[in-house]
Length: 429
Ligand SMILES: Nc1ncnc2c1ncn2[C@@H]1O[C@H](COP(=O)(O)OP(=O)(O)OP(=O)(O)O)[C@@H](O)[C@H]1O
Ligand SMILES: [Mg+2]
Image 1 (tube, rainbow, N blue to C red):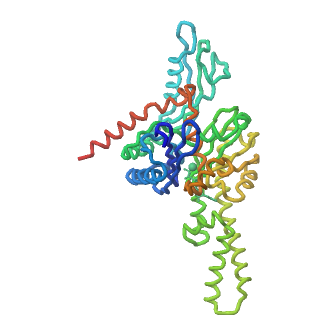
Image 2 (cartoon, rainbow, N blue to C red):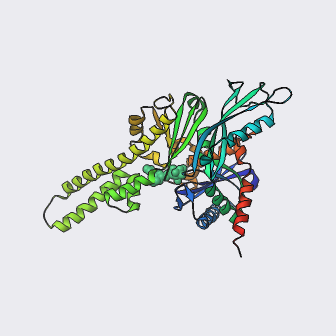
Image 3 (cartoon, rainbow, N blue to C red):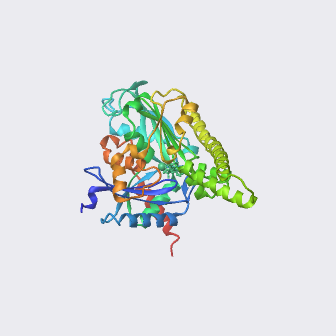
């Protein structure tokens, strides 16, 4: 068995599941995976730390059935409604001897960019990624992502700040601490996905990546290989299940099954209704005709319900594109992934509303390694988004020195954790 330190362990806290993946650092091969369903993230925030602590314990215990090493260090992948972003900019004078941008200057400008974020936006939030969008020297854009060594008098930076809700993060860190897990890093999984699962050519041309998840839909748009904005829409595939339950008057579990296999499950429901109808009417009617009539009417209702929600989602995506001035202007179009992307007709609705080419990314097509591993081990990162956590692991492994400033905002996690723990300790007996 390989030593624990040769593997990276990621835990993703998404709106419907906690997922864990272990990847070998050298070969990038998947060693183990596990997942547990959760239902206590409300409006993007884990409210119940004890429940999360228990879920993480069970996730780790489940993983240890296949993975015998001690799980001590983890990387947290974040998704869902706790996330938001803003583009912020600042400028400073280069006052050193040779008028050269050095590490100090870069450090200072990043700090200034952070400080320029309006307080009503940064309040109760924590920056996870600070991604340079544009550098300017003496008012002119410089085409680089490594500004060290540039010469001039005035230095400007525009950067995308991706935040998480602070309370959400603190609660996750606390639950890890309770399980004796040291958090090495925190990464926004959708940013990681956009970096290593989408071609650079697409990001250069202009592309909008859409993750239809459980309770949320996350959108990140790129142009010239630069992320313009990340936005989280508070509607996801679970809303479609809830709408189906109400509209078809079935249980939530049944609605979910209908959503996943509409043809089969609507036929089943139609024959149940036929049975009830025949026994209550006590008359001679042709069962097959009745069955067919029920099925057609259920199918019509089903389409009405799911189209209404999917249209809502895509109208909000269109609003995002209008806000950033890219409506109908992205040559590489829309890439849709996540559990909700597996619904039929998503691409038709996307094209109809957004007037852009659309690709659906099915997890199993995306990554043969992941699929093979799941089949071989009968593993359950089932029904939903498995690529985001895998992409986060790859992103973590591919980080280098050049990312130091990009990821600068994450440096003080242990401080947050310590403060949180001290804060909690004052209430302990
Ligand atoms: N084959 C399928 N067809 C339709 N919907 C599906 C299918 N498989 C999974 N789903 C739905 O996808 C949703 C889960 O998607 P996903 O795993 O991407 O969510 P998540 O990562 O937990 O959420 P988020 O990204 O918002 O934090 C659930 O509502 C599930 O019912
Ligand atoms: Mg997700």
